[in-house]
Amino acid sequence: MTKNQRLVYIALLASQAVIISLVERAIPSPFFFAPGAKLGLANIITCMAIYTLPVKDASKVVLIRLILATLLGGTISTLLYSGAGAILSFIAMLTIKKLRFLNISLIGVSATGAVFHNIGQLVVASWIAQTWAVMLYLPVLSLIGILTGIAIGITANYLLNHIEKLHYYMNLQAL
Image 1 (cartoon, rainbow, N blue to C red):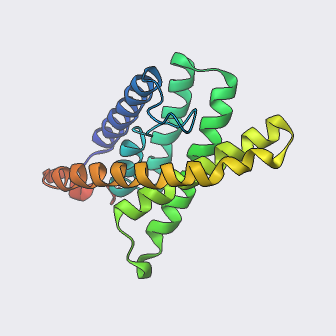
Image 2 (tube, one colour):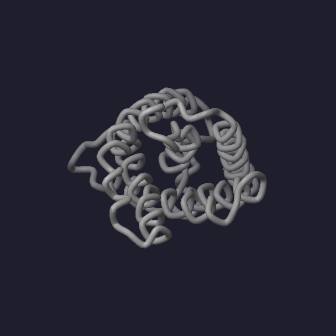
């Protein structure tokens, strides 16, 4: 894959993640017992980026999504919450993926990312509210995060199996 093709692939993933983020923002929270909890559908694209691109390029996808989704429909607080969650979950997912001896699947990596996304957002909420009491919400969000992370991981795994059939995919991580 040429450099231009790789840039187009990064732009394609980032644009898909932005669209999914904006659509998900328009959907009411499906969890009545956990106000503010979302499905995290854009993490399908993050998982795809982690498994198909080098770390540097996958991080570009995440950062572009954060910036564009905020510019197109967010606020500064949205950027703080989303940024903390996305960066922490991205680091956690990369770390778990690199620990090959644990033999953790994409589904496990996704669930880990979902939990760490919640931790990142709650740390920001604690900082803004000036109290650690916000962290009491973590068990509820962790349970939801694990369940949605599994669903996102299954979806990303399905997509990854299909994208592997593309000829140029094999050269993505080599660049």
